[in-house]
Length: 310
Image (cartoon, rainbow, N blue to C red; front, top):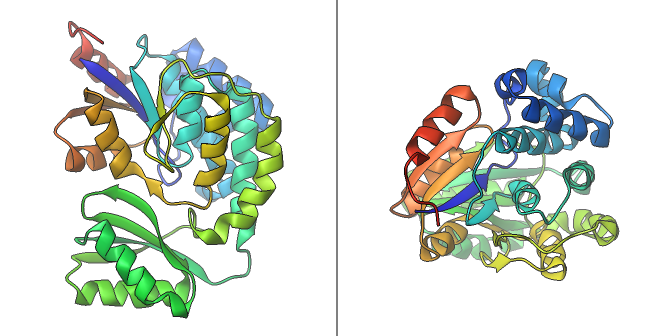
């Protein structure tokens, strides 16, 4: 069976993530220790104890989710055929593939979170999920109301689940129009910036010089890039993809379909939560499991036991 590892992005965090595995597996504790040294603060303590407000701060959230996901990964005795991650999770996938070191990934995502947070400071922005309309239909609605301000698709999550973001007035107008066109739900999201839109270009510009200095190795396995939903392996194309995804929509649905075409039939969600698993099951006919504590790890390994891995 062909297996992919997938890694969550911002929003998956919760107080306690990674703590169970760190308490019982030295390899998980080592990941947190290395990540904490690179970040300059105790990531395990933040993950295990919070407070939630500090964990939600973007500059903390991104290295914390990355470290918690890699701590889960460290306990798995399996190499996947390919990997992908949602937004921030793309960095985790690249560490999994050997393209980035843990320490470099932690340092760069901490800067990425800070730059994204500051890109629209003082501007009235929002993100919202729209359920029940196609990505093309939502993109057309955004184009119709672009005169009101920036409003763009930021995430193609799964069939009928699209996230839009931009200036708050324009986003609210598109949400109202989506409801009129038959959307089942249109839900504002509790996030601090309009991620993966053109409003993030200042963050991309600031990140570029730092990314240029980060050593990137050829990936051992293909990593599906958010910006293109295509596999990347070479250092130059990885660097371009990481920079482009800051201000471009996340093509998660398309990435899942691409992995399915690569014969992936089991997706293992490695890290906090099960959001990706739900998106994947709504997109393709495949099995999913997740690993974020001892119980889920044992269940995942039981599922894999006796199955040939290709």
